[in-house]
Length: 196
Image (tube, rainbow, N blue to C red):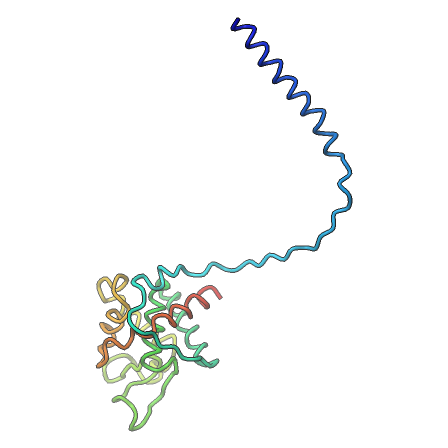
């Protein structure tokens, strides 16, 4: 009985296979008619940095945003390029840009006369008298970013700190919580320009 059942199953399987072989080529040659279509354009976008890497703690407090002109955008791109040159991750660029947004609104400020905070200059309002470099160095976006990030790298655990704490540890500002308000715009700028 077992042999009979096996022969029946094999016979049915054989018929199914044979039917598939014969029907397959016939179906493949069936006239489907003309195929009309337009070429499909596929947009390939470079990978953007992961938001979880850019803002690992979520933004803190109300966020500020300004419209950037070409010079400010170029300065944001210069900060990103310097961050890459330093071999630091996207998060360092977010902290750097947020700091610059707070300190100078991403403007490479020279001496402001009576409005100047001591001898603060550049994107990060760094002071030559505090050892950040010469006025020429501090007003060079790459140099000032690398100087800021050198200070950032000396902060133990900066990668895991809220942005305002990491920035304040380097900057020692009179307004330590002010950096937090720029985190979203800084992250948006890094996401937009990191791979451009």
